[in-house]
Image (tube, rainbow, N blue to C red):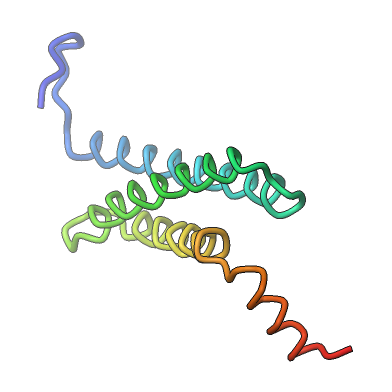
Length: 119
């Protein structure tokens, strides 16, 4: 690949380096989202619009992380550690989805708590 503006040939090591940087930046973005989630979604009752913003953001983070992971998990991908990093982020994001988007309704949750922790 040639960059006409710079007149440089993109080599395999250049592409690998760029890919690695991109995956690390993406992982950092996911980490920032998860930190925000803990502060905003776990520590306080969130407004409906904030819950919807969280749901939409999480949905897109999951989609794009799965896409990146599928590329990094290719047997010919040069840096296996990037696939492992993305797999870890996927596990975290999927856990968040289950916690916040597939949460048990209040009624059944209270019933279960009462059964497990009787007064």
